[in-house]
Image 1 (cartoon, rainbow, N blue to C red):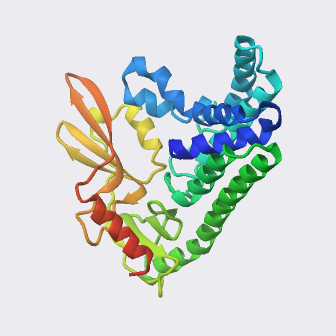
Image 2: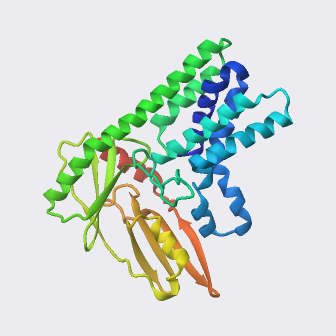
Image 3: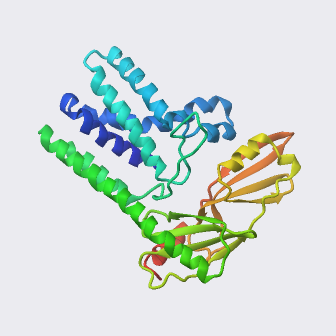
Length: 332
């Protein structure tokens, strides 16, 4: 999830579990604990290697084991550094802040190694990485808390924010469970022999959802909005290509491909290639644009070295793409 969501979730959790003993400073410590797991990029900086970062991102720091190890150590360290800080409240803040962070990340698409050191990545694909309807209730409650003097009132405000945002997560799960059969009916309507499929919400909302369905020949991409009058829209086809050239057939690349969970296609460009990750779909409406996957890996050979860069396109027509999502969301 985005940094702001994790920060305000951590702040709200921090006050909920330790506000009575620590007052408003519990908000600050909670914000820190909610942000802490995403600092896992710092140990990878000396390597200057995207392979290392991708392998370890959302690893130990986003795991149950990580939460159980880091929480007492951090609480002990800070309580020793500053005598006015007590171990137990800090421990509660760090434990629940980190656990809430990794739980929220599980709702997104990338995947979180909750059970590290096992390599399995948990991803429920029920919320877009940035969703204002989830974040705003938390922002509002944390901001409002700063203006009340009574602990009971502050805690009530924080709990309202946590409850509303949590219900939004439950709502998103319900929408996914409702729309999955609609996507299956869409595949049947187009007479597709689907091997498997994945679904997720489109950018910044939980009304318009998209799917990537795998067949023997390729992938079909489609969208369904809760506001559609009929669930029998078109499907966009992208040919499957899993052939990996020999010069790129390395352990690192195979590991990279495993992150896509099999939803990928390779575009070979002589000394470079793209691995398109189809779990994220396309930017905007592929029927109105030259479609480009939201997420891809660019691999290049330079002097025998294998270089990796993550390709997140930043199109010049971004406002037009958002307008397309908005129009499609409305069932247009």
